[in-house]
Amino acid sequence: MATTGGALALVAFGFVVFANAVTREPELQDARADAIVVLTGGQTRITEAARLLQDRRGERLLISGVNQKIGRASLLRISGLDEETFNCCVDLGYAALNTIGNADETARWAEALGYDRLIVVTASYHMPRSLAELARAMPNTELVPHPVAPDVLRRRAWWLDSTATRLLASEYIKFLPAAARLAVSRVISPWQSTSVTAASGTPPKS
Image 1: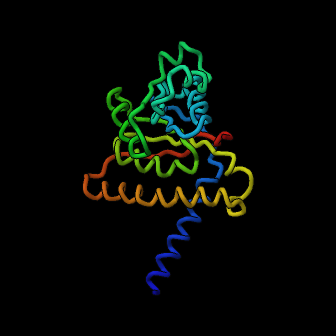
Image 2: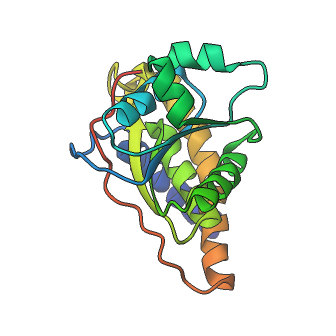
Image 3: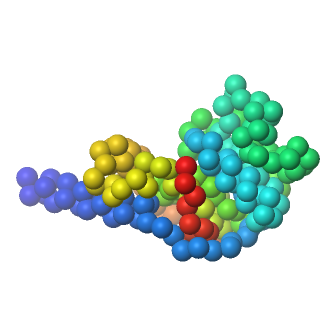
């Protein structure tokens, strides 16, 4: 019983640390990389990633995990980019169905184009799991997180908002096995040089 209670307390403490970390405003930076990848799941993520491309923070943009029913015309409209920039510098990934798929799709894309430093755009609560899966799939690539904070995490303190708390708890449960997979991959393979830099900007509102 004592062991079980201790384990539950540790998990609860980990959740609080996780929740506070993903709702904290990161330091403002003007990071640049070889390219940008955005993991789909919200229109604002794509718009923000397109803005980074427009600002020349990376030379190409991968939109990973695009729904099969969404065509280029819709994504062009959502991105806010001009047609020339979109056709020139935006790649669409339709293969990924989840975060593990995003990581595998991104790894193949980065390897094909010779990129070893990427800005990663996704929701702030999704960022830790995304970085864990990406680091496992591409251990020699430097990852620069650029989180986008959804409105539900900006309204008020997360512990005062049941919707925010449920969202964070669900993501924390998903993050734990992702972190475990990354740890195991480090044990069974020689340590590689993956690094995750500080967040590259204050999360824009979703």
